[in-house]
Image (cartoon, rainbow, N blue to C red; front, side):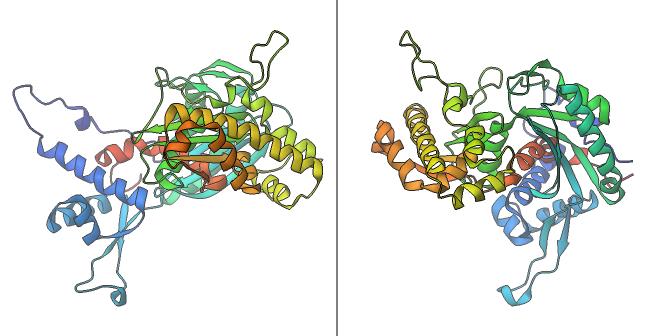
Length: 407
């Protein structure tokens, strides 16, 4: 049975301090990583394109692709000769039999997905819960679903590990869920618990930060070095910031908690009281629509179709509050684009121009430079893709740690 990705012992070998430069093995790992990462992020490409993009010569790229084929990480297909100029070059494809398992615990459900190398979600299972799941219950539900999936996934392919997107503060390094207020989790060693229950390596991250990474790599923030992402889900509003091409994590990985910023109302002493997510939230939208539960896609459809004055008034009220928050954040972070996911993307769709006007009225920076506002393009796949990226990180960094044929 194939296990999780683990680098082989040679990858940890230290070079002698008397030797300068880059050793041939290290250089080979770097080049293998570069090719596999290009295929994972940008899709199938002719071998000639990989040659041009990496700056390596044709024979070197051919040898590297051959090694990745031997390791069952990529495969080649014949090109369409009618769409080629000159000698056609084989097309190199990421092997989708290599998959990561993604998990998103929420207040009303546990969602488990399978994401193939290349970023395609191939399976999604939503297990609804009658009550907010404890960390132990989330582990048990997740482990049962993973156990049902693993035999089929490992029959012809391999699982790189499990990535978890949690709506809360996740400590960088060990996956401890320091605080997930809507789940009522405090100091839960979720990564260790789930790893023990499944036998797989488990990585845990904040859901909105993982969403920011996914949109930056595959979605609406692709190609942009400075991006602000806000996600609205059942557990509130979280966010992530891409600054100069890298995720802004902060000292412990807790950066991006936009939903808990205050200043959206005053208490009896004139002090800021209400948080953004108390003013802009999913539960109020459901209540106005007269329903108690809905998937993200169902909620969006209902909002777009509704002509109920109460629903419309609420949507515009939430857009006003959201515009105020975004304007302040743009002043601080100066992003190229703001990407909205979850129900925030849904209310944006109701009247994008109105939200843009509110942001422009609030933001000094938005008056000086062009800041675009877009909805997340990955839809309901977003958190699955973001969580799975945690499982692919080691493989992409060092493909040599991933052996040949599956056991």
